[in-house]
Image (cartoon, rainbow, N blue to C red; front, side, top):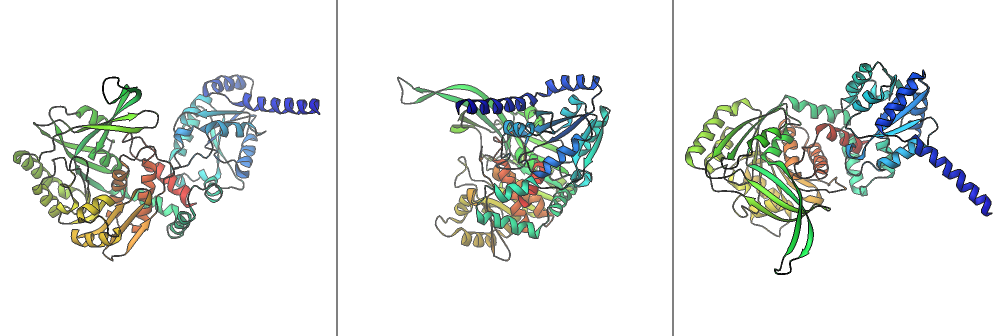
Length: 524
């Protein structure tokens, strides 16, 4: 028995060793493939996430192998899988092992790039094979198939497509490995029945025609990463060791960068402090389609919010603000007002991110609300302005986004049902649609029909909540301006929020292509 058991063990171990021998780095593959080509072998290359291997994948890879002599498969590294919370289901090592165990696959590599282009140029395949769903390039929401085809042609290869039965990994995962509770799955099914994915993608792309003017407070977010060294021997405090820091373009910059993912043209108007402007940093962290007009105040730095974090959990310990939030002087107020009056008519919608840090005075509020063609507002309550910066400072708006605490403070009502507060405040604020974000409870909105419509949260993993509401606001404002159905806007907004909480602070905006992929995955 022991000998038999030992033999079985050795055979299994041998098979696993063979699997691991197939897994190579891209650099190793580059050398191996070059040698195989010198031997006259024809190299076939496939690329994908391959999160859940199913019969469609197996038949696709088998068909690809028939195109040549050696099949190389590259997979997208975990950090570049942009299909929403909970993905990939299996990490890159398990995905590589699974593929390497297939008889048709000769080599596997994890590609540490966002697209397959670099891998194609390194491997230089004779044939690059994709599934038939990529043959019609206009249906590829990522737009990457064109780049991949150009890369293949640049190394002397060609692209080919397989035609066989197909399965959707996302659909299988949604049905059998879903992270959402039954009520959320039912909600997604209802959205899918009312709004086809292709139509949603088309509507998102239609926002490129919009020109948006974004106004609001400039904020530089800073994260200083630390680890605890222990309690001070002489003081009642915990001493932490500094490990490193990171700066982000936050506040209105984050709003502009997220809005620029949808709108073709975004113009940003804000105010910097002359003492420490951060101007070069800010310019280097704006999206390419964001233009800017900066005004300057002499008596302040550009606002910096410096947070100290425990580096392993990204847990925030405390915060220091470098800020002068006194209202700007009349001369600067007049300069900004004249500039806004001159440019208002050039834009389809005005997006205001009011953090209550001194920029938007009563006079500018009056000007904005009177002149904006379409006005979207986000007015925030924070530690610097609690009790002094409410949405009620604006006499009208077309669309308002605030969180539940902010709408309760504005209504001076701590305990009533939030739905009753929303109905009351929408009327008082004279706005068409009021959306309230509610964290893990999702969002709710009320329009002039006074009905409350709720949408569940779609995040299964939270890395950092900072900036999630700003991103939701920046994406949904253009969608409101082009009059998409409001249930669809709420769904898209929650999808944006789910993607944003996976990004540290404002390190990057939510990418619209990632959003399209996530929406596609959710509704399959």
